[in-house]
Image (tube, rainbow, N blue to C red):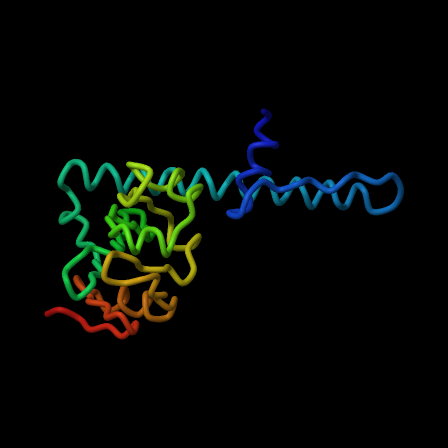
Length: 179
């Protein structure tokens, strides 16, 4: 499978993308140009996401997270939901720590194909992942106690600017800063 085919398949979360047939005549070169630009953007985003994940994994695996003073979002029962890190270059990385869900929550909120791709055990131990902030909008926060609570972009940016270290998120989406 070529890189272009792989990018087309991964470009849409719901499944493979079927390329539009190319038509002779007017507009074909514009479409080709648009497709090339789209594929380049997807490739760049995947490269950035991979880089962000490597940085996040390295900080966690070496025990150096505290050295970057992360902002951590937690549920009321203390599960880590989201780590927000500012790199030395000034870039912001959002990291989703690994988490577990109960069998009931797992069945209710995921599909078999999603579990296969995104869990460590094919069931309820979800893999950690990260991305640069510019590539993430309205992150969804989940654990066994919260089901996909959406964190607004304005709220996230405000918490980062304020320099908070820890924010607790309630089931209804309200949050408070831990002093």
